[in-house]
Image (cartoon, rainbow, N blue to C red; front, side, top):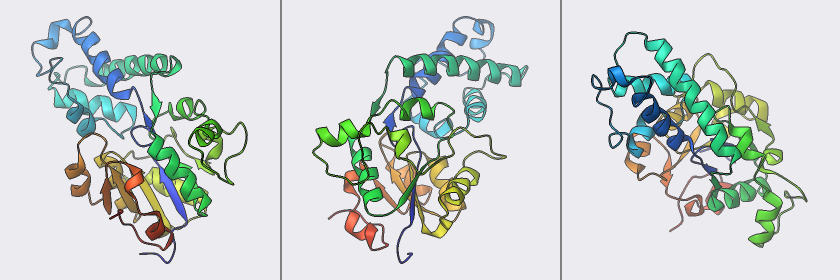
Length: 263
């Protein structure tokens, strides 16, 4: 363990916010199978019931949009003819739907995550957002951290009047196009670089198996957040600790350079 952690890097969807991405992926595919792709639907393994939260977590969560679309189509055995055209059509439809849902306020911020990010920044860590989603800033700029702190009666030197969660980050590499998406470490290495923190001194907060694998591939520490009953998947990906809420992380241990859960 490092003598002291210097930075914390946060995925957004599933870590900081309960986003409508799963809903957008699921409903976009249903619309396509019931309309434009009706002629090939019977050749696939897709059904409305078959698109489960576990499928989303294993095949799409944490991945760049086109990678997620390709993975879903492969999982449901969509015929390979016009494969890239279908993936593009699916990804574009999902993007249109998710933006509409976000703008309608169809998401919530996780209180445990907001408490945690305030605590670690007050403890002296620099913080970065690093989501594969190009929609991350749409979420972050709508979350008023000052109002949250007031409601929770949190006294923090880091939270000033009018502060949004987007303003709170010292760096934001979300939505950038990297040579490789997760589980490659490119996005997290870029975040650590912008924080001016060595990878070995950075903690990554992730809810997806691919994201934990990306953190470990970059020689970083990883906290897996099992919000979707997927603790086993995150542990298998080598998360250093796995919690169901960030309130379970021992902040005193973290300040001392260790990752541990509260007893």
